[in-house]
Image (tube, rainbow, N blue to C red; front, side):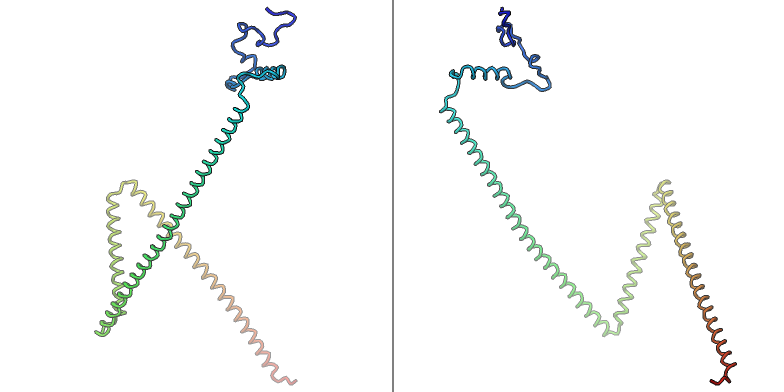
Length: 255
């Protein structure tokens, strides 16, 4: 089959019918890396060797120089056109964004001015209503004062009466709600309300006890201050009396 003195170095040197169907194991390929695309290292080295050994031979399938230049120029023109289209699209997008921003700014300024005018109108209207109410109150006060009525006292009495009525109404509503809630309460809710009331009473009791202790401490402090003040006064009085006694004893002394 071959010369024993010159055996084939690789499987590619064997006849076609003797070559292995796959060189995956020979090339030590791993399945996790996936299929290898393109020429193998062996074929690349084979082509390089042929190119070095036979530099004067050109393949009939090789592209002519003029055609390669035309293809390169065509690819360059295509890239330039795509670049110009991309720049144009970016410029158009920037223009749209700027236009939208200008429109929004114009709308915002218009809306801000409009809202400001509306607020001014509302304030003016409220001011006018308050002025009319004050004029009516003044006219009513003058009329009642001329009729012999103390308007200020009457207003205070009316406010107090309205306050008492409102407080009485709130108390009645709270009692009514409490009675209704007590009727509709479950045993667990009643237990929770009782616990809540007990904790409230306990807090009040502790607070009252703390206040009483604080008041007692303050009384004790004031009592001690008063005792010290009285002791100092007694000491000063004793010193004055001793000085008077000495002066009476030595009243006949002549310098």
